[in-house]
Length: 253
Image 1 (cartoon, rainbow, N blue to C red):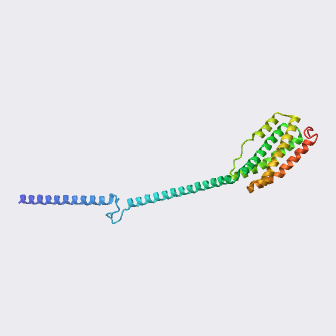
Image 2 (cartoon, rainbow, N blue to C red):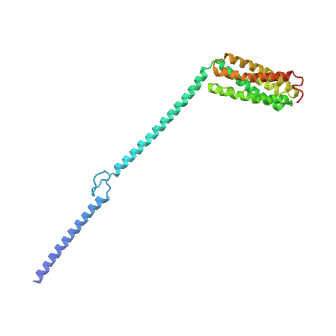
Image 3 (cartoon, rainbow, N blue to C red):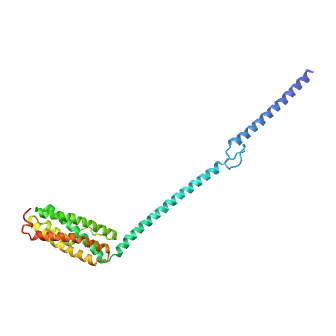
């Protein structure tokens, strides 16, 4: 009897052990399934185990697409703006070029002549201030610097508006006058300065301005030549009076 009871107890124990093992395996499998559902990222946008939709991947693609599109828009806008600026610059250059092309050769020469005359008066005036010892000559020279310096600025503004390139140095004739004056001093300098610059140069300049005021085809060139004439006339009269006076270049007043 005892042997049969022992066998029954062993059988029951074995069965219980098997049932317990089966239960552990079932719990392990369920746990792994839950972990897979919860831990594995859903990159395709499909429904997850909890019923939600994970759109991380698709949202990221949309964000990058939007950023790329915005970047292209800014680049296109900048390119368009640059194109407008280039076009505007080309238009301005074309306007300048057409202004120069519309001027006659005589009008261009009139502008150049006015520039050279004023440049020469300023340069020789500075030379007279540094070399002359005569008060009247120095006063005349300072007036040349002031008046012709102002006139030169007006000529330069006109040339720029018309697209005309002015000379940057004196022509051979005016260079020769300056070179001659450089070698003189004292009364000899004063006499030569008033004769060559004060009288001769102003006569030549007045004649050119008078021709420009009558013959220039461009109204702006004509107007400037007319405007500058009275000042040159005043300079010429002052120089003639100084050279005719006995003490004009020798008194040192």
